[in-house]
Length: 503
Image (tube, rainbow, N blue to C red; front, side, top):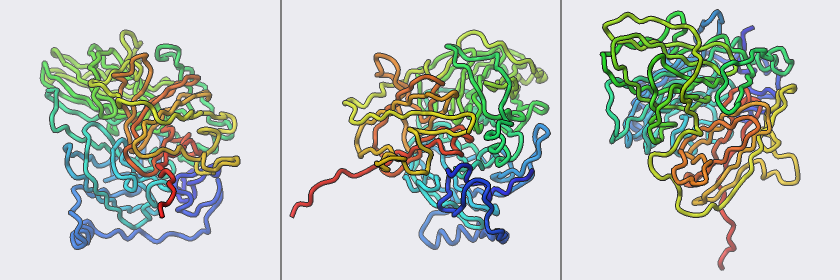
């Protein structure tokens, strides 16, 4: 079944961008009007218009269009940037001005979010929260200063477009880099869904998509993983296991691998046969280097690792999907030997690193007391396939006498803690836009790691702390695309303290 994504924005009365698009509830058809072919102005025309308006010429122009996409025996109508999955790479240096033009050549709206980037709220790319969608046949220009460094990515934040390839890498090189290495490689790891989004949601709600796989490769501390959807397969930089991503290096080389989990809903456990991984950054924030045999990277998180290739050989990289028995593979080999693929799933032993293993490279505290604490209850109903934060679905107003509880209100300058209590039967990768946060856990949290995405294991509580220093309204949500599509979001909203007028 082919999905007309213009008809799939709402699934249960909850949508991303639904109000702006004027769509009705799940399954409702629009009036039947057919959109005319997009008439996106050329890059030259856009640049001339921008320059005429006193705006600098864009460094990158991203053309978004539909293109048939086949992988692992599944035919999809991909939504691609520059015609590839992942899309056009963006790379800047810390301190640069970000200048990107989006040309929407789709027959439907889109909205592009710059994941993990500290930027003005109105350029964050989240419909109903930060901006209107980019309508079919129109363009959107983004410009803001880059005040950070690290590994990031961009993706659609409208409906489930991200799951169908509307994403790409975004790297910000550091002005001062404390590490040296011979190769700097970006690895975007994606999951390939078994069909189009509308059918998947319907299947989840009917029980047809209930996976029966029991993962035999669970992470430590009994954090077993359940999954919503059995994906058809997984890719690294768009390449599948029959033609794996391959890197030829010189003997004795040191590699920096930027591991970006750009999947819709999959957690990966990553290892390289015979080689150690040293984690140096998470979500663009430096951590005390820690060596591991394998690491767990949740959906939308980014782990930067150093890998030493000590001698001649071929080494298979495994990204094993938790909750599934499949994996995606890559090969790193010295230039003097041929690449050899080991397609056996590893028995993960040795040291496993996840967010609980990390310590910030520098003290991360704010040096003063906490001003505000919220409990955020994560809950769900697998049978009805409903996912909630604090008992409601975004963007429906809070059911009760106080609709303002729809938001998590903060004031400029506050230190805020969010205590995420997971009472659902699944783990959730929780992401806060426009900020970084400290992940608390130890009695001494002086070196609590700094991230923008953290996984909350099922049945557990994780507390994060951030400084409210970026006014606006910001998405705070589960980054599992299927959970988000049915409403698992509660925005953080800056408010102004009321004062009496002085006459």
